[in-house]
Length: 530
Image (spheres, helix red, strand yellow):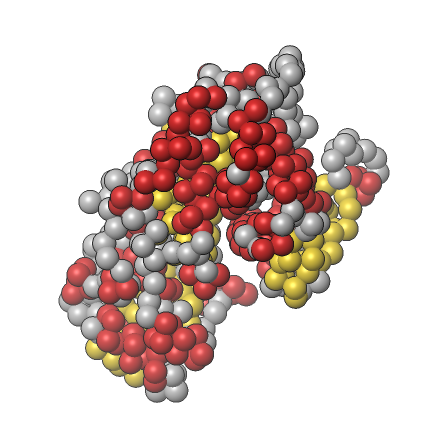
């Protein structure tokens, strides 16, 4: 059973949103990272192994680069500080030359961690570095799960303002975990984050990757840029200019970032800005929209890195290797990169699942406040059970035929919990989204004595294909028209939500019989998580 982590946060203070470069209150308690201690830069070791491999088996280098590029060039706020010697050597310096060669030779039949359970979990981290306030804060945290048997990949972005329990510290924003660990012991942040996030999601996470600004830009440029399908035109008049944080007038601190909708060719600098922007007008102006853009960047880098053109550019691959070692921190070993490449050959774009934890009406999070009035996010349900359910079922997919029919009818649905069983509506919404239903609201019904699940069809049969799918998967009764008490509830909600209100085609009230229903369960075998 998933572990329940209760949330107890004060809600009687007006929230104060954290600005782009503002340090979370915890940093004052664990140490100020805005100005990091200078670290003596020592000459990096010559990568004789890679030079040898490059000369004698160039294709192995290609496999290694592609394997790590897929999972590393993917973050938003990333480290630019001078690294201590143990970090400068990256994963190459942590094991000896002969051990690396031995692992490469013996890697043919070896499996990476998680492969035996048919789920490999990797955590992608990004932080600001010494040129940014709160340099060790990981503002980008993304879970990437791979299912080797099917080639499916799931990406789940966790917002930086999500508040979680940190051992020995208490409740803090999730982006503080790396900072706290690094303050105690340099180089321990990655391991601390995968352990904490693993406990939070009730998943075994074995790998982490961190990339910095400069590395991101260089590697994308070595790839001769990437092509990104921009979903919405992005206009951000407050994109911060590095080095002008204290300039006057205030307007001189920002530039206008504009990216048109459609397929766009991006160099490293533009790709980084596209991934970082969070003050754009309209629907692109949020951390959650930014997380979706970062996932698009991941897919674009993967496509370019795996293209045949890259296989014919050995010097670009060599340059990427140099940049990876200088700007990437990871616990992935060389032989594991080769295995990741083999697995990546089975990945198709239509098999990539994208999810972002957010505070929308149909999301699993809500706004709250922490110490000192800081803006934070907490689970709507009061614990992390529903988020754990989402993470556990991340790779589940509905039958394509059913999903295409629901998407074609463009169905919106409101899900209410008609019982006293905590989390039923949230779990049901996670499953329904896999079928293409657009969940516009999740909440508790004012009457929580429903034995049987009920669908109220507000379209009066106009979206019959979707209704039949919903009825079949939830085993619910169907009713046309609303009872007076439910109509009153909806009118009250309309007044409270005002401009944010969205009409639902169906209202699903989950009854006690739904405790055994899992609409997505048919699509895949149960996956062991811990």
